[in-house]
Image 1 (tube, one colour):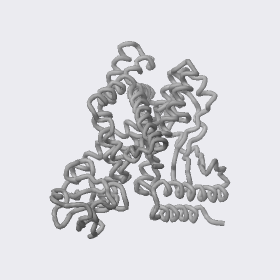
Image 2 (cartoon, one colour; image 1 turned 120 degrees about the vertical axis):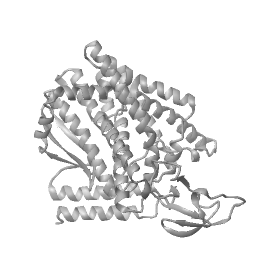
Image 3 (cartoon, helix red, strand yellow; image 1 turned 30 degrees about the horizontal axis):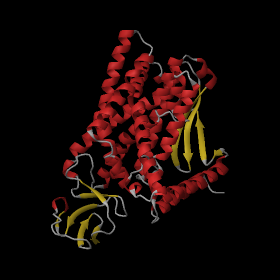
Image 4 (tube, one colour; image 1 turned 90 degrees about the vertical axis):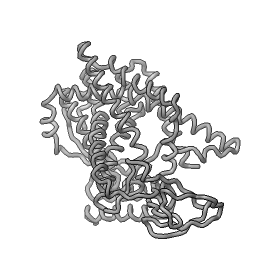
Length: 445
């Protein structure tokens, strides 16, 4: 019988093997999930923990005292949750928050300030950073979609009217329409528009498309703050926490949970339930803002150590920094009279090689023209850059996506709690679910 340590080592070895396979990222995902499913089965047999479709729920009562201690400052946590409600639902939160009129107006104003900071400072950096980490050409295109003045005005209107919840919901649907029209064109009319359409969503798996160690640490912190906030607000609502724990797929932490007494939770008033539900995303978004400023400070103090050149995005050379092209500085290289099939001599972080124009094309970013994308030859600096960047960007993405009215997401339960008409809730959730799935379709073309 294999020990838990040997099973964990086997899981890590399988992940490394999958990462280095010369196959498309979609196949890497499938193989990676299959490998982790096998590891979960081995863990289940060894520990006796029942797995559910390869997912292990590891329960513990550790940390419950800490949760109770944090919950003693009730007023601060209630304000925290109410600010999160404003970030989630914008001006509409005025009709959700239950405070005296003047106090409610001040909370909404303060929440809109936080919403502005997140949308103006953090949001514009999330996609460029993830492009550099994921090495995904599709997401590079996605970041340039809907940047016109009219689209920006509509997005801003949705943001301040209904917070991140309404803006992301609207963006999800509008981009799904773009994707669906391109798919229909490809399938029935032979058009090639779909090949220029970026996926609107992607899966994230440490070791597959984000760095393994930094990804594990970042996801662990994300899950900790998210579920911890749920637990604290549940205790403030006088709801008993039965246990807490982590959800594992093999050796990967893919979720966390607190297990409140559901019967007690259903009996508390809607205001308290809303605070419990919105607390997770609120914690993620506040953590994103804090990590962003740490990330910003790190970039400022490490400017002398940043590499310069062209950062390759997508293809087999993704993550490579090109220093020279035909002996010239890559950032200032002039193509001149180069024609198709011309050969270029490349000097890069992976050594010297040649490429032929028109073959194996790739996207790139000029590191000298963007402050937030960086590469470091020093492994320690590269690790810190990746870690801080993943913490701020994934906290932001997970925080806002969790507000979508999708089944099993907090956004769905919040909608169900605050909208009386069940048919409307069902219709909205179906629209969101279908749009969400459609956004993945470009990966298959």
